[in-house]
Image (cartoon, rainbow, N blue to C red):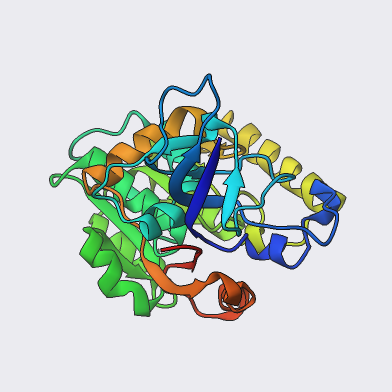
Length: 310
């Protein structure tokens, strides 16, 4: 179906720079953009779950397609969910990919219950902040979610309900002090790399799981994509999974998103104000290049959004 786009974040920095070209075989020039929100302008005959005039959000799931940084976009209806009118379009347009990545990991932690403890590594980023909120929804007020981040994000993470730990300080010592000798029941890692894996191993109880949106490559989302990167990623994941068979922690890497089955769940979370996205800055469509510069080079406090239409 076709929709008038209300808001969309820039592509991930690696896509905006063209780093993803070896994997996705992009041809340039092209219209980029993956996530979106807006108002339905037209639907196909088989579309039943949304109608013309509805506010919706979603993601162009196929990276080869993209094209959401535009006034109108045509996307498969299965990658779209209807929004409650109370949800702002800038919030909705900023959240799909980040929320789906967080959700893909938190679903693997489905054993979490009221009163459990969770460590979120990199809790202030877009994926990490979604994971913090989703984990808090599971463990409740009786539980504990520890979130690592930079000192400038302390107030934000505490406003979500997390217990903040500064990664630049005595990170391990502070986590140990908070836990008081106990262990966490689960770890969500949004950063990646061996340091995050070792941190998870140190504080995880026996039988717990580390769900990672980062994987073996630290800050992998900004890494140039190529054959060597993919081999390193695959080898690292397999190595950590093998360790789990010999007493190491259980490990799961989020390898794909499920917009066709989970966007509706995320929409319900936003409606109930159980999931929100911090907006760093909004740009009009004709300043999309400045939005990309901000996303790539700025010290972000949330998601950069391109506002396409009023």
